[in-house]
Image 1: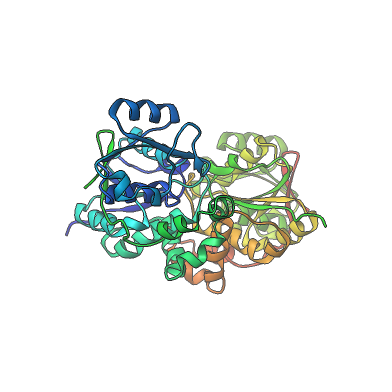
Image 2: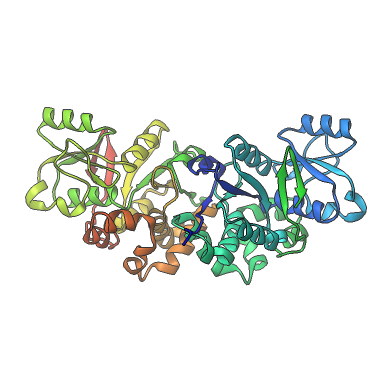
Length: 241
Length: 241
């Protein structure tokens, strides 16, 4: 009998190097809000998303290809850009058939780290596309690393909750010998039926809701399958799989 | 009214630099087994413990001062040493009035990191001395960073459980705006009444029990206040406070 593939959870970008990515599907997780926004844009018909690591690069590339430059720094639309990191901004009317050039505080950086560490395959995960993520991981039968973007390298609960959601659905199909995965599964099991009610306890909630009033964003980002599309990285672009 | 001091939890040595240690009491946590062993030795009358980062240094210093060189690498007594990292090894008969020169895989390294980052005060925490730790933190009224040693920079649950135990007792007295502390408190609340029964789920349990048969060590390391002494770092030495 073939051994089950392994599954590990990295709770911060600063720990990603501890895991072997070269044989793994790496799931980039930045629940508030990069990976939720990416799922939303692709679900609504965006041609693709080009993740870049700086605002000037976002502006330069978007001008060159006729795309839309967008991004945030510290939760706000980045200076020099007109569009931010809200999943609700990318409606079908606005984004269909367009290319989004996106830069974010944590998610983009983690994706570039996974690339540098030669990840076999990179996908992007969020509650809005959790079923697509799980279906893909199940079908691939490869090792999995769930990579939480956190906040400036700190542990955060919303990314861990999503990792736990994936583990909750898939754990029978993987060998999981990883304390952070066990922790994520435990935390998810406790809060799975009340994610939105639990949200005010998260440090990130205060940043997004109390400072910027983004409660609708939070609700979207914590709802399963409202933008259920597989998001896969291919030659510099995130595309619908 | 004076603001409450803050409390943060660092779930890996690789994240310790994210926290301001210079105004904080840092609690070094290496439940399996360094900080449990340190509490045990001091509780049983050891004069002091000198934590060092290499086996040759442990041998050299112990010879010079007439101390006992001890330590482990990857869970076993380190090559060249006669004494390891088991809390049960340091009975009163053996250790009273002696100096222990100790090197361990994770705990010693974390302590030296906290020193380099100018921690205001460093203490060592484990379930065997949890009440002494909490009493000290409560009396000091300073900011607190709970520093989990983990396993080679990976997150581990036993250190997080101890952090959760401290948070559970002290949270009313601190401002806690920290997702890892909230996570630790949640995990501890779930398992506090059955720590030893939960232990077989921990990756470290397999290392210690299935490979080395150290079930009695595990039980000791998960029992509150069986070596209830404050352990404080002072000029190169860990001493009873």
